[in-house]
Amino acid sequence: MGHFTVHGSLDLHVQDRILLIEGCGPWNIEAVKDAYGCFEPFINTLYGSPWAVLIILHGDPIYVPDAASYIVETIKNERRNVSVASAILVGESNSPEFAKRHLGEIHTNAGDTFCFFSDKKEATWWLEQKLSAAQIR
Image (tube, rainbow, N blue to C red; front, side, top):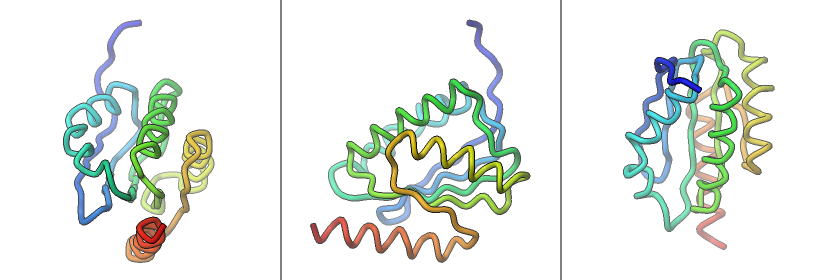
């Protein structure tokens, strides 16, 4: 299989113990691997104690099948490294209902604890509750 041009963009940064992933799709495997490759050392700093993920998607909210499979494996790895939950905002995407089905399937297949939100503040609060509960255990 040949290599393709990167489609889609992903930006990642950390605030407290929450990894913020913001992107504009659609995404192919090249875009996903490029983003995770650039930010992997950054993400690794979260490992060792509970952390969470806030995902904000714009554009066409779709991953091609090989990118979706890669993300499932990435989420499984994150779960093994104490990621406790993912909050997902798709209201600014071109197809919010499709995004919920597509991303819901990806996160379910990965065994993730996740929820969809329309408000970033509400999503952040939910993640903070999940982080607090995980630290009490």
